[in-house]
Amino acid sequence: MSSGQMKIIIGWLYPQLMSTYGDRGNVITIQRRAQWRGYNVSILPLDQNSTPDDLKSVDVIVGGGAQDRQQEIVMRDLQGAKADAMREKIENGTPGVFTCGSPQLLGHYYEPALGQRIEGLGILDLVSIHPGENTKRCIGNLVIEVTASRLAQELQAMTGTKPYLVGFENHGGRTKLGKVEALGRVVYGLGNNGEDGTEGAFYQNAIATYSHGPLLPKNPFVADWLIQTALRLKYQQEIQLSPLNDTLAMQGREAMFKRLKVALPVVGKI
Image 1 (tube, rainbow, N blue to C red):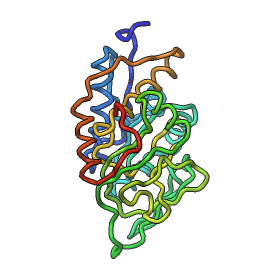
Image 2 (image 1 turned 90 degrees about the vertical axis):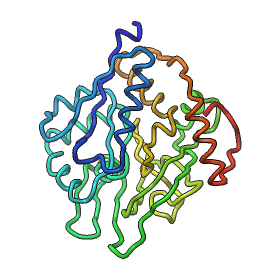
Image 3 (image 1 turned 180 degrees about the vertical axis):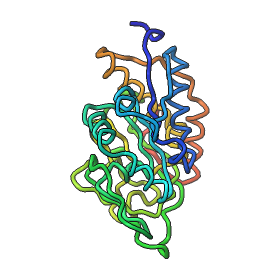
Image 4 (image 1 turned 45 degrees about the vertical axis):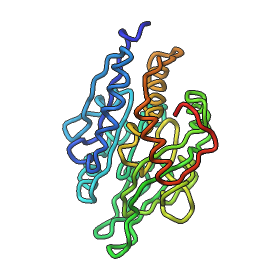
């Protein structure tokens, strides 16, 4: 089957409520990098007007950040059959990238600085707690080494080098992981909680992270991993993506690493 016969449906979680930090750039990056290779792409908003069947139809899921109030609205809507559909998608390996507020929704709960605990879906074994209004936010540039074993291996196979991600974090909540695997090790920045050196989480094919920027334009090989994983799962065949010219993205990454004085152990085609 040729690329022109294949289609990717990107499910965008609550775009009106959970796009506080420009994470729509993740949606655009997946869309464009798939289209440039000849794949058909559609974007399906997953919001209050969506059905569980809508959620079941998507091939990639993208979720962004939100303020506490918007997060409460989302969680009131993401209940019952919709919640079951989300759990089923992630458990069955649908790839996705979930940033800031979205991982908190996928965890057990989030306790805001003010107000009641917001119960999550319990898909990821993690909890998030805001220490209080007078606590400093975790803000600044972020570099992590991907340590989630399978993801690290697959990204290294795609890029030829150990995977490092660059982004920007801005969060008040602190996340503590249970048995879920961390996405990576903090090289620069604060990560999940500023204490244990972990950043994000990785479960099945779901990437959870505090890294904005947005994440995928700065790390386009992760977008390619999402596309490739989605196509392999959907069409049950081996998928090899054709290369794209990522010179500008690579130069941007190198400039950030140099600015932050982060020395990578291996220089490759990242």
